[in-house]
Length: 491
Image (cartoon, rainbow, N blue to C red; front, side, top):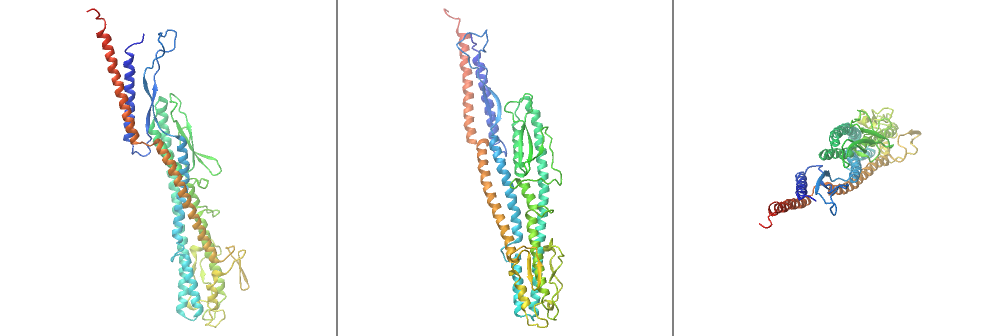
């Protein structure tokens, strides 16, 4: 015979469980605007039915349900979507940083404009052509020296500014490494806290949220792979466990960052990670900073091209200038100096020699001051065609750093390549941002608190709570009937 009091216990369990659901709903509503918060739910579970299957079970038609209980309070999270988000976040971090680095480079080069190197050189060439028509004019000679100085100073400014930005990128690399180590330390600390909670049968949802928020930040900096560590004990089946994290290198090898024992392995100072293209902010910074040993990288590449251009331009200009004659009938002296025998660093060291206006070699014939043919030759340097890194001037063959084309086409190629890289980086940044936002919206639709949904749940749980309370009233009336209304027959 089943007990009438069993109904009270069933209703009580219903009230307690709906009450827990109401409290969890209130927690969700309270954290609707908390960054990184994941909505939670109570997993309702049926309690063990009565009677249990045994030899001495009461003979009733079947098992009766005994109510409900709140099994676990679990986050609503999709790990697959999380992995998608972190993959897109990693690519976005790379192209965002790369686009920023190229943008700074474009701001320095400032081409095309009235303030870039091409404009300074065009004005220099024009001053030489003006001198060719009036070679005896001291004012025209002074303008040539001034315009030449402007070209040299522009080279120096570009070299200095690009070097400064490159040094700033190195500081960004160091700061990013510090941030990576800090995130790893925080995640390992949270892992440790989780390992002390889960074995007791609880789900530390708030710690899970904080860890996921940190892993999201880490995924923007470096490409990572995460794996789950089971902490054992009385951990629930839905417990998320710990997280080991490794940085994925360009060759596919993995550099451990957080171990299974919750220890972090920080990146040492000076440890340059070999990261693949498109893999996180740190990879973009490392590529932009480049390698001094082989000259690879974004900024070393354009500095190297600028040095080659400055050195080759000065080399050709000096050779032609040396072949002319000044106002005193003397052979021309080197116009540019300060660079040395090697082209490395030439753009930062080039300067105009200490020449008097009369020492500008505008003439091709000694003591013929009205001759401006050499000035005209100097003004046409930009159109001389280089073949197989050589250029013939008179009877002399110059071995140059530029392989082919003209000096002007070489510089235009450098600027064009920079522009293409900038456009590509901006395009990929936009594309990855669109994908990232799409995945993020999908993730938020799963995990983010919706006030409308929570209000709906609140009403649902409230009605269920009221219904359970009403059931207690019904059972109470039944018991009152049994206790006070029976056994009075015939009175």
